Image (cartoon, rainbow, N blue to C red; front, top):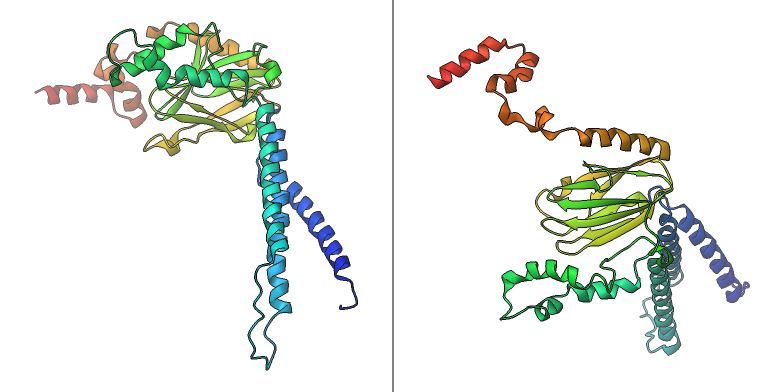
Length: 340
């Protein structure tokens, strides 16, 4: 063992650790399936971090185990260990390596974030557009008061919308921001549900339906508190903020049904605020759209479930009594007995 040069051992260990780290980074199986064009960007960043983390783990833990064996207390040895301190080259080395890793990952993550549309020229304008200082400056007269904040936000949205695009978007490359999306869906978050409205077809549903391979834009808003719209398979997440418009654009690449999760603690039943996004082939999506367009065009008062006030108590309870095997006459007697 002592005949082998330490440089050769270090080289072999480095090659082995590198190969193991790359294999772990590509085969960890921690991420769900990819279902959007944006997902590979996030996965590549995550895999890179996994490679670095695995290499650091092997180096640090391997050094600990090796030194525990090499410098273990020998039988009959009662001396103290040699005190070692003040190794400047070593301290500079273990300070520089993490700094380079952190800076490299930071630059890489910003590049991924920007490629996905997280940074764009409109963002800073939106922040100034909706900031409290801007709202107070737009007060027509008098002293600002707390109750005037929300109305001012509504007024300010119309004052400068022609100058800057009032959105805070994520999920679409910069060069595509000027291109209209193939499908626009308005998403409203409320305690504790998501509502999806298709403005062009007057359809409102409790789950999101989109076609595969098409550019979809979600306009998010919230009625009460901050929510966060997240589809793990798309690797996209965007907050829904009261009083501030946000966007999320994506292109789904694989038909299927995927969960929609709220990732912002929004109240006591936050854990139950779930829905799903159904990605259809184009023909199947068109069929779904046609079927729901017909339903949306039906008069509201013809729907029994939405008009119980026009029903008598016996009519209202008839489906339940039939399912339980109770004659309708018995309900009449119970009603009379209650009135008496």
